[in-house]
Image (cartoon, rainbow, N blue to C red; front, side, top):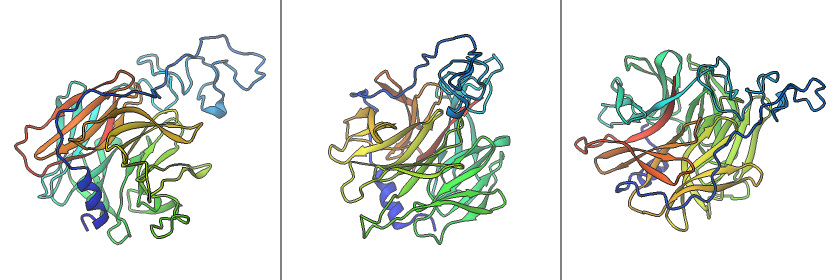
Amino acid sequence: MRLSAVSLLLLAACARNYGKLPPVEEDTADTSYTDSTPDSEPDTADTDGDLDDDGWTPAAGDCDDSDVRVNPGRDEVVGDQRDNDCDGRTDEEFWGVAMAWDNAAGDSSIVTLDLFGDIDEEIRLSSGCYPLWIAQLPGGRWVINNGQASIALVEPDGTCTDIADFSETDYGVWGVATALDGTIYATTVDKLYQIGEDGTLTELATWVVDFEDPAAHEAAITGISVDAATGTLGLFDYFGGFATWNPDSGLDLRLKGDYEAPALVGFAGAGQDGGRYYYLAGDTQTGAYGIYGYDTDADAWELRDGWTDLGYAPNLMAIDSDTGDAYITANGGWYATVWRVVAGTGYAADLYSTDGTTEGRPYYGIVPIYE
């Protein structure tokens, strides 16, 4: 199976022609984090469970409660040998993005761009590989959604090997993500799986998908992301819903999508470390597209950046966890492009665009690269 009928309709909707990305016209709710934590002396009395008085307790995610320079609200300081933002990485720095360049004829690639939009590397995949969603693995390897029929591992030389077959499931396989330790996660619209490199499937959560009974229907999850700081997964519903899953607390269906009359539709979601989630979606009333940040207090999506030009449609999205900037893949005709949307500035522009000479090679999945 390459794509189900439902998948073809959804992907076709995201392949309309577009023009150059216009300036962002609306920035009504900047959800990017600003570090306002004051430096202070340790609280030797420790009356509130916050030993270093930085506003974060170990229960809230502080990974070193003896150091005021370390908590989930901090930005990473490269070179100080601390995991300042408690995301499990030390001295990491956002370097660029990698995206899937899919080709139905079999000539597919994973392309890495630096911050200047220059191609750093192109890994040409072996025949039979059709990368849609992609995620990194340790050792220069990748895991891909292979044409929505399977999950495959990709070696540094481009050799592609299927490890889990989803061709007989009702909806195929959709979003794919990995944790820092290499744990692989994927969703089949109605289930969340952990996938071992040996092909072992572990069902982590399930929910009701019922397009005949709106009352019984719970979610249609098409995208997932992993919060490196907490291990929590963000689960993005095609019809505007949102859920989370955590190894300790399990599934939490936060916002139910209304498939009969959705306000937003989209299968691209991404997370920023520290529990901030973003949804790339279309407004069904206006036809405009936007990046929406999840308001955890209101359990609702709030528009962060929006565009009213109807001549293009974005596909998938990655978030720079350091800044909140978004990187978006989009396609139009023979052109494939990556946009950069600078958080909180109202500015967006092409990071990279093909020259339009290669037919049938659209960009889909995109992930941030840290070094």
